[in-house]
Length: 378
Image (cartoon, rainbow, N blue to C red; front, side, top):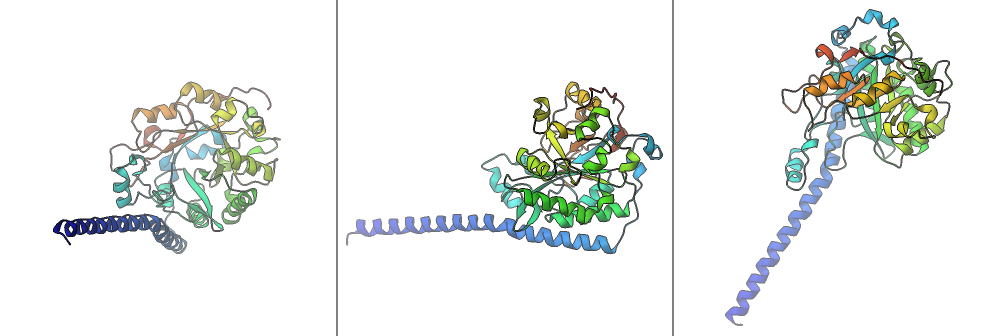
């Protein structure tokens, strides 16, 4: 064998070894990335179980609800539920991204918008937050809560039923609190009517009817939810104190399936919310159900007419990579009743100077610009 032939064999062998090492490294990295979400879910679930168990055994002293509100709560009987503005959080369950995954993905994509986290739900409530947004999926016979498959799965409240328990425990310990909005965002199209019924049942079974602002409670003697807006016939704030309004986030398929369970909405636990585009084009499938409207932009000329026509509107004050002080006063000036933030008081991460509040540093405000302009029965 010539020296050249032997050298070539050594080179090919070296290249083969390097390729094998590369393939094994990529396979190992893929396995780690694939397995990590499962491991983290189990860790998050164990933490959630321990926290809920501790909350059951050790009741904290009730907080001072008046300290978060810019009006006198003793006047609640004279104020309508749609006349207050509340600060809520977006992706309220979220833990920060896995550091290794974040650093790796940052090489290939912009993931800065995922790089933040919130406090636990009960702690958010203790800091005056009066609404949360939860992303749900149905996996292996149960509802779970997290952000994005594989890359951003960390969650303070991965299990839906335990999350309901935590919220109810906090509420029982703080009777008379400002009503809390719970935006339930379905993150998959395959949620069947049966699954939605299971979701509805779980809310009633864990929370109990006395803790819920249901479509039936909102409607009262009105025939439809739309009539509530048309007549500005909202329940008083006093009737809503100590309760939760579970809101089905806009999602055409899920909302339609949910409504089909009971078109009268009299037996339902969740109140459907609709994207502004559906309202603006008068989607006939939803006409009788327009009451809660999602409009993320801070456009006063669009939001105020909705508010003054009896609707409850949700807007986004900021986002994880889009925040500025001026948006706080702008969000309040729209009159929107549900104002979403990623930077609530007491936020854990990121550490920045910006913190979202409503008027006078409060998290609950009385609307200063609601002038109802009825447009007739729907």
